[in-house]
Amino acid sequence: MKKITCLHPTWLIPVEPRACVLTQHALVICDDKISALLPSAQAYQDYPDAEHVVLAQQALLPGFVNLHAHSAMCLLRGLADDLALMDWLTQHIWPAEKQHVSDEFVFDGSLQAMAEMLRGGTTTVNDMYFYDQAVARAGIASGMRTVVGCSILDFPTAYADNADGYLAKAVAAHSAFAGQSGVSFKLAPHAPYTVGDESFKKVLALADKLAIGIHCHIHETADEVATSLQQYGMRPLERLHQLGLLSPQLIAAHMVHANDADLALLSKTGVHIAHNPASNLKLASGFARVHAMQGLGINVGIGTDGSASNNKLDLLGDLRMAALLAKAESGNATALSAAIALEMATLAGAKALGMGDQIGSLVVGKQADLIAIDLSALETQPVYDPLSQIVYAAGREQVSHVWVNGRCLMRERQLLTMEMGALLDKAAWWQTRIASPTI
Image 1 (tube, rainbow, N blue to C red):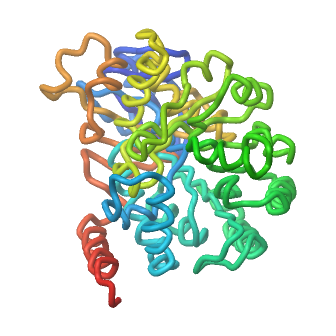
Image 2 (image 1 turned 120 degrees about the vertical axis):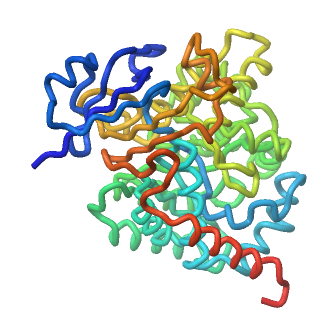
């Protein structure tokens, strides 16, 4: 027998069409899908036996899509702050990862991160890390829609010895979770400065064979571009284009340092961008030209990056930051409106993942990945425009309910698939282990 739930928010924000806000409307969930959007009075009449949930002074909208994250790195949150990217990576993060990262570390860290993200309204994460199967298991345990980015590098870690080893682990993980609902995979070559041409060619060949996309850090810093020019005689994006990687199957994380030629190439090839405003600011990487990208039709979603460089997995905070930065960077106060920012965090991210027909907007037939945001607090009153209030005033603590695939994962701020005490105990255990040089 099908389970039917009718949600009755004060404001229903479908994202498609853009800037639309429905009042006195209900959304009907039938099992795992959205089956109707209709006036509330009609919902009560048409579905008398359904579960009816009234969300007074709350906005109902699609769940957020975190387009770039390193979930397990929440266990390294605050370990090395206020440093430039390469110093942060080479002197602090990579040594800590070498010593501590394991299947257990990745599962525990990913589960904690997913709890944090769900509590902030993120229902889908596009991850990039090691121990791919641990990330997948955490996604299943949490209920979060999880895209496992299988990292590939040309140097050894505790996970693999070389690019071939990482690729073999990616194939094994992809096979192990074939057909698993809510879990999918991408290949994630780390960056042009850590992956050589031959390895990129292998990545592209395997991605084509498995029919999965690619997720890569590109043009994150000015040094990355300068080094590529010195080593290869061309910018990283041009090099990747020559190797055949630029296509709608590629998500380019960061793309901070993009000149006009880069933007034209991105537009021509259909590459998607994962914009990470908080991480880019914290690491002083620069200001992505998001307004110019969108003007050229480039699809731009929003990511948090990892907790070690953000330090919050707070997509609501990051979409606000994205809107403000775009105005300042472009010198145009009308750039990146609240409606566009919300679309970036939902439908744009879904499209980048190849899931635009499944999630990202409240459309009949799509999966029921939904969140409710309570706007009744003093800090978000009065409500003249719920879109603006969500983007510019609301905080993640105002996310009240979360559904993924029609399943309620958080009700009135209480997680239903994870136990907070156990997560906190694990975080404390890892802190003791990582902080002690003798362990």
